[in-house]
Length: 283
Image 1: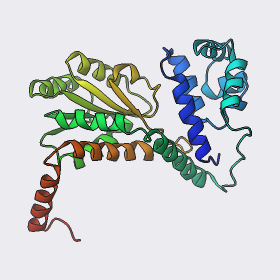
Image 2 (image 1 turned 120 degrees about the horizontal axis):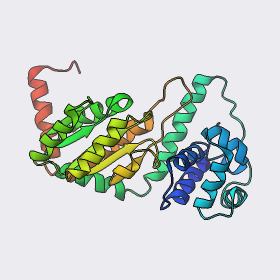
Image 3 (image 1 turned 90 degrees about the vertical axis):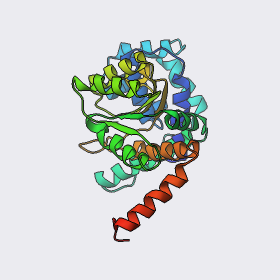
Image 4 (image 1 turned 135 degrees about the horizontal axis):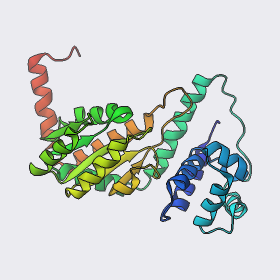
């Protein structure tokens, strides 16, 4: 689909509609599907939505009732009343590769809409800046996001600890960070969500850490184990998910953390001086 900024607004309206409701995992799956297809959501029948989300048609009805509507027709009418009057036209993009790029552009537009309120990111930046050390968790598909964040964060934060391997040692490393004075943990969580990530976040909160999570959806399985969740959608048009929006949100978090670190600029200048002295870079 070739979505416009109106589609990003539709996704934001759906996120707001779903907030504050205690949804079951099946219902979160339906919600995530509707956010991903926000422009078309008002036009889906309950059968179509069930098929897209991989759930039963009665599950869609129960989902609508959980949101406070009499049934799915009431939910669909509400979406049509508050959204654009016409279904957005099918994309003229020629091939699946271009469509995947367009989908990521739409995800970035949606992220820009969410960042219209900068306070959640600013709060996250303050939490991360204050944590000494700062553990950063990301397993499997999310390991690249966690590693990228950690690489840059080490230039301005005195003690960043990357947790990118699971197993029985993970809890030990969380314990070590907590014992060293950590107050927060940053997690990147992308589909498919490993069970041990959910378990690790639950353990981290039990240990007293505040959990800040970048996830693909506000309804991801990690949501209930996060103190502050920042959503950034992934692209699903190719054989493997694409994660441009989560990566960019990670860089935005870095910026917010730098803003909360009074010596961030001095540390960057110190690094640049040492890099020049050692001849690290060609440019």
